[in-house]
Amino acid sequence: MKGAELFVQCLENEGIEYLFALPGEENLDVMDALLGSSKIKVVVTRHEQGAAFMADVYGRLTGKAGVCLATLGPGATNLITGVADANMDNAPLVAIAGQADTHRLHKESHQVLDLEQLFQPITKYSSRILSPNTIAEVVRKAFKVAQTEKSGAAFIEFPENIAKMPVDSRPLLVRQPTLPEPAAARVETAAQLISKARSPIILAGHGVIRAGAWAQLAHFAEKLNIPVANTFMAKGVIPFRHPMALGSAGLQSKDYISCGFDTADVIICVGYDLVEYHPYLWHPTRDRTLIHIAATPAEVDAYYEVQVGVVGDLKHSLLRIAELATPHTGHALRTLRERLIRELGLHHDDTGFPVKPQKIIWDLRTALDREDIVICDVGAHKMWMARMFRCELPNTCIISNGFASMGIAVPGAIAAKLAHPERKVVAVTGDAGFLMNAQEIETAMRLKLAMVILIWNDSGYGLIKWKQMNQFGRPAHVDFSNPDFVLFAQSFGAVGLRVESAEALMPTLEQALALDTVVVIDCPVDYRENLKLTAELGEMVCPV
Image 1: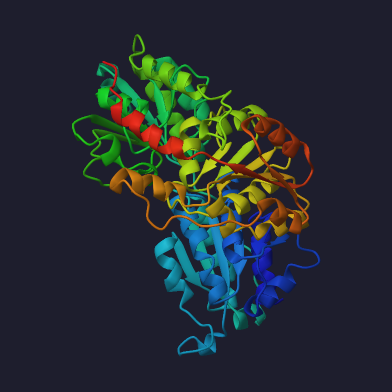
Image 2: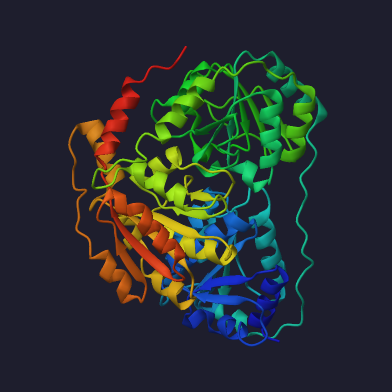
């Protein structure tokens, strides 16, 4: 058989269900090998960035590497943003790009870049296949590395002449390493520090979701009576209805959650990655006792000097520490939770137009079931969603906050619907982020997917304007115009709806979610609330 045929067999051996791809001259043999008997479903996208984002979100939701494929040169470089996003968000992903014949890689040649070197800084593993006899090893290693904690991205460069060569080989046995048990001495030390703490708080990160340890975290918090703040990427890691849940940390401004860190003497970081929320923002004094509980050792940082690190299987670590530590009495941060709950409902019946962010979030949360999935793009709406969208389950509000790239919502929603066809899926996006990958609406329509795209329309780069107003008191070069989003949706054969009043938002959402197709909702948003929130937070005094 040809190298390309063995390559496809190796992908099948890894249990790949979907391949998000764009065809090109240098991956012709791979695309042809995917025809016929292959069980892999090829999702042809309209841009390589869309393919990478789909693989990114698919990997994050399933824990299995999402796979994207492009051709050489510009096809490969178009993958970079999505691959970097997956790597910094620790989502398992394997990216593949075709390459020119190896006989012209040593010189200046049409569309040729050194892709192995190009992808090396943004992946855990980057390799070029130089012989058909190494295909099985390279593919197995790429998936093993991508799916091993901390999970991330891997890249394979596949020259076209290697894909054509004959080979007599087979895929390798699939095995993933298991995490070690936590060291007993570290468990005991952590338990002692927690038992002696005056006012401990838990910072839960995305590693808890990757480890599938949310039930153990809830048990840990409830048994020891310690409140939990989650990062943006760990929304739902503890149910919002749980009495220990404080909501999301990471607004980068004084809020209720940062008050909790200010009053804590021991901060227990569980499955936390520095890329999610830099410690200088929540530990500026560098004088608190930090406990690191994760699958991998703590990163070195001046503001993250841990007293003890409990490294190993996260589920076992949480259960064993909970068995040894002494539960705390009272709930020193209950006031913070009560304030947050009051704030969430303040604008649920607001009639102002354009619609306030708080009202949009309240209605969206009300319209969705607890298992439904929201894919949040990057912009001002992300800050509001992270702060105010209530989650009861993990992986029901996907936010990119490592690389934090605009344009992820629409392709991400396609991946979410493929991963969980039984759930409703909503892409929450700003008008700027939407148009970065709006072409993937055609992909969703071709696949006959039902999903909703909710556009927060302010005709500008809202988050940048928010920061400009805070820093300079005036905006600079952030305004633009938009197409008619209703007609734009209809041009793809999708349904376009426009919100004309605050009262119309809920019935519009309900109508959209009931339709068995792609629905784009144009919702004007009142981002004057951004500056009001900043002013309120600036005046906020932490309760004693």
